Image: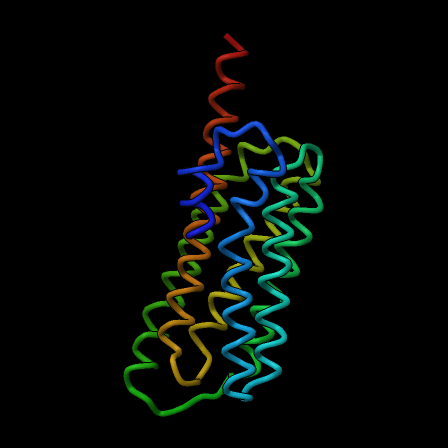
Amino acid sequence: MAAVLLFFLVGRNLQSLWVRSVCKALPVSVLAISLIFSFLKERKNLITARFSIAALCFSMAGDIFGEMRGCFIFQIVSFSLAQIMYATSFASHLKFDKSTIRNIVRGVLCPILVTYLVLFARYVLPFINAGPVKTAILWYIVLIGVMGLLSALQCRKGWWWFICGALLFIASDSMMRSTRTASSWGRRASRSR
């Protein structure tokens, strides 16, 4: 979310690919570095640390590929690998406990998340003409859905932060995709007149 904000405040109107890429990658880099120091300090959950740091690196690569023309497939692959890393990190903490609050959150959040992603897919996919692109975007929607569900199903200290992070990730990705889809749909509609 910070990357999107920084990009829109500073880098959006800049012509230099290098400057735009740095504006998008800088917040993720800072987060990855702080995560490395945090895990080195605590020496706990090293498996989680590796998956989380790898996910952030793939996210950063996806942001940079997104700035380059003709690199959509590389962007989707990078973001997909990031979601797989996040999901693997969350899956390593799956436990079913008797916590009433967690079970209420899961019972409410999981159906809402699935419904949201299904509605989002129904909104976005009809505007995409290219079959491989449509398949890649559907694949990515499934991956962010799995990641979001696993964030809700995990049991570990600070689980609220992971859920909030996952939901912000899903919201920002879907908003960016919706904005791009709506703008490209508007351009196609104006060309057809």
